[in-house]
Amino acid sequence: MTERLLFAERALLPDGWSRDVLIAIGADGGLASVTPGAAAGAAAHAEGPVVPGVPNLHSHAFQRAMAGLAERAGPGDDSFWTWREVMYEFLRRLTPDQAGAVAAQLYVEMLKAGYTAVGEFHYLHHAPDGKPYGDLAEMSRQVLAAARRTGMGLTHLPVLYGFGGFGGQAAGEGQRRFLNDPERFLRLVEAVRDEVRGDPQFGLGIAPHSLRAVTPETLSAALAGLEALETGAPLHIHVAEQQKEVRDCIEWSGQRPVEWLLGNVDLGPRWCLVHATHMTEQETASLAGSGAVAGLCPTTEANLGDGVFPAPAYLAGGGAYGIGSDSHISVSPIEELRWLEYGQRLTQRRRNLLARGDTEPSVGAVLYQGALAGGAQALGRPLGELTPGCRADLLVLDVDCPALVGKPDDRLLDAMIFAGNDNPVRDVMVGGRWVVRERHHAEEAAVLAAYKAALAELTA
Ligand code: NGQ
Ligand code: ZN
Image (cartoon, rainbow, N blue to C red; front, side, top):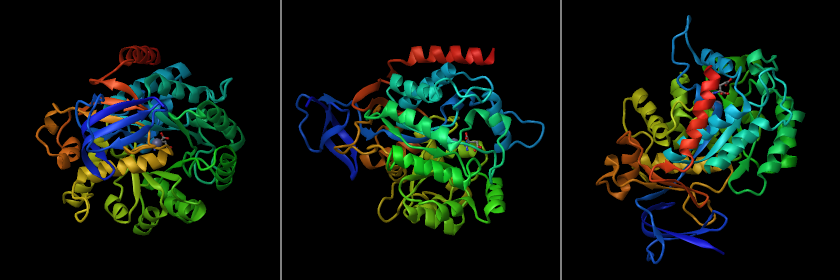
């Protein structure tokens, strides 16, 4: 087997920082061996500390192009729900080629920021009038092509979206591009499965959009149909993000959204509950114990005025979590992790809330390692660890980044997350391939030119 070798003077392994680590990369883009205390021999030298790349577990790629367009006060009170109207308006014209150009631009930005895999929660399926494209998977293929072009690892999560509110309410005009019944939805999933099958850069799962957008019947049909296509695939859903959503769910079912899921689906490690912002103590403890991942998107949750996730109780209960950039008003794992802790500091008026004083006092280490483990679980691919069998997805940090200068190994993650706004990521490898070198992506100029052309068309 052809192997390539990388030597890192410092590398973050599952049990902490190690010295003189020899990393062998297999021809399949996976890690063949990881050996601390080794000699460099003929291996290429990493120019700085090496850490695993971060999985981004929640993305709506097209929203990158509308970031910044919903920050003006409307005539009445602005909210998540008025933001959503701006988003629907933005989708009146977006074409498949434009969506592909936006996704490629986003993925270049993500890679440069240190995200090496993404979960694409994909609901923009049809033409503006709601008619399916000639190829049902047209929009999905745009996203897959953007990932291939940029070298991003991707778990595609086609979204089941059938209704406009709890209890099977009719969808509105702004939602026409998203709608499928379970039968057509499963045909789309099958088409995507056929395209990604056997490629270790890709994974496949499904995402019932929210309890607002499905009924218990369509949810069951999709879950049953998926099992026939792809056993054990990840399952994602938006849940309990807004208080109005919680009230509407109670009115419909007598239960809160997370409570409903706990009682009505087999909530275990395959599930990723995105946001899960509004939970009682009981829901928080039960979700933490279920083995499911909480998909946290702190910058989007702040931007949309969602609320603050009960992270201390959830982590104390052993809950798994990962991070997502969701609406892409920020594309930075550092900013997501920083705000996960800062939301707690601001509301509780204390510090270092997400560290574990007894076992891991470093807030940065808890946040980063947690996001790696939960992100990998939610994306259903072997990610997030510098361990044989995992993908060779890694970042080389820049030793000249002022925030990192002079910091001992056990403070590096703290400094990276809490001590600056310069991007500390120098080089990025995904699936054994360097996609960012010295802060540049080989395709960045061409991808940006296509993005500019797409936005010029959109705003013309
Ligand atoms: C979405 N985004 O599907 O893009 C949602 C908003 C909705 C976030 N929840 C729309 N952040 O939930 O209906
Ligand atoms: Zn979302």
